Image (cartoon, rainbow, N blue to C red; front, side, top):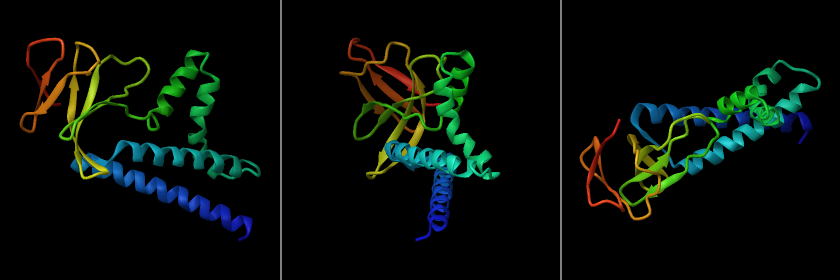
Length: 180
């Protein structure tokens, strides 16, 4: 295989992956169903890594495609400029699509992800999803819990389509949370 053929195929794979992730995002926005967040995270990392490689490939000799692939190198530039406030803003904006969602609570009927909102966001916002099959999940809404982020012995139960029952481990109360 000639080198130019390899790079053309590599670029096609990059754009197919971009199209797949955009299609997945569109399906998520329209229906609420999406792939498991770990799969999305690794596909997005692959997209960013291929974008960085293609940026340097198209930089010398300069091609206009390099301006598109520059987007994938901005998080790296933000890391180097992180000592400044401008670097922190660049990093926060460009790392948002790549930042992995951490599972804070998981049971067969409900899963809570910590919601990333930037480096200056408020605390304790979570995405609530219902696992479907092995690699899919249904987005149910977002909740805000003010009494901490530790769910060691806590329990969550779905109550209808728009609410969640929260049983804190330290209190003898039941809290009803509305999904937004």
